[in-house]
Image (cartoon, rainbow, N blue to C red; front, side, top):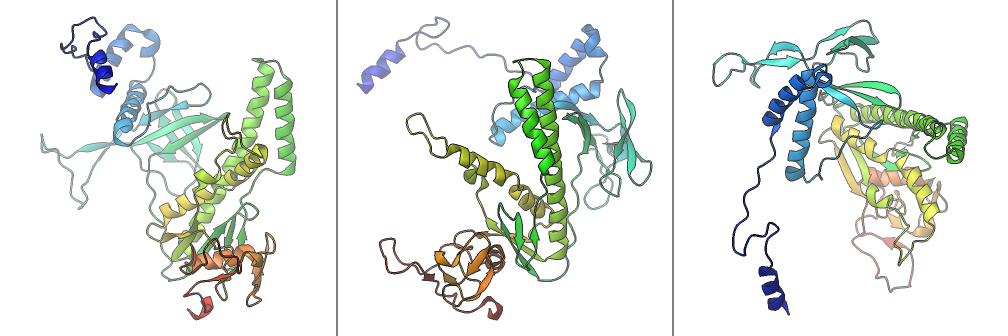
Length: 408
């Protein structure tokens, strides 16, 4: 059957009715960034509305599109998608000031063609006071913005975005890593839902979320939006209010992650996290039409609770601020292992917050005990364990975990 199918396919004429064996005519390739810029110049000349906009901003949009097309083949990203109204509102601005560029060795950067020093772009930013500064936006003039860092940004480009009724400006600057404390102190972090980050030194850090009153407002606006007619202005307004409250929660979470990661990078020489696959942990449980899932709503609520803690952002920002000083420890058995004697028993975990070792009687907070194991690198499947068919005991003891952590 396989050779017959191949022969039938070979006899089918091409889509343009060409006979078999004749090659298709090469189709013209899409214009690149330079060709699109030339088309933009012609379009600005013919269209008055398009010509009234800033040419640099429009060229930056074409450059973003070209980078997205290249990333589809080089980085494995998918096809670029259209920007959606009210969701992707923004534009990129290239600096208008010219400044000399220098090489890595400190010498002037010279052009290969002319031999002159290369003049790069720079954003024009003026500091007004300790909290406010202003940046020059083409077509708008000087625009004030709130400073989040003590020093002024030295960038070549910046992006202006509109999210949930608030304007934001982001400068393309890679911040310098935080200075290491110069000590060999190791800290372990156990991440959870009840307690966002439990440190091995006993501290417990919680990510701020919406208050009880704000959560009640979210439910109220969601009910009103559900009762409003489809496509009405009332439904859009209610959903906008919900999005504004959700954005407030996201802003608090991001601010907490930034401050906590800075504290970890400046205080400890080595930061250890338990290795969690957050993408798999927050996967939906609805299943398929043939095999529907169970307890789908409960799993959806757990997923929202996990994502509201900012586990991934805390780990990512700590790695950015302390490169080379962040390690991952396998998560299995970190919550069931005794940090004093190394005994592993599921019965030692009495509750979410209580840990009592069934071997030595060591008592500790369960999250602090797990964080201590993470700090010592005691994670993963122990090297000595009983097979699954064995029903002798639930307690397991690793080969090299017979002494307390304080004596190692």
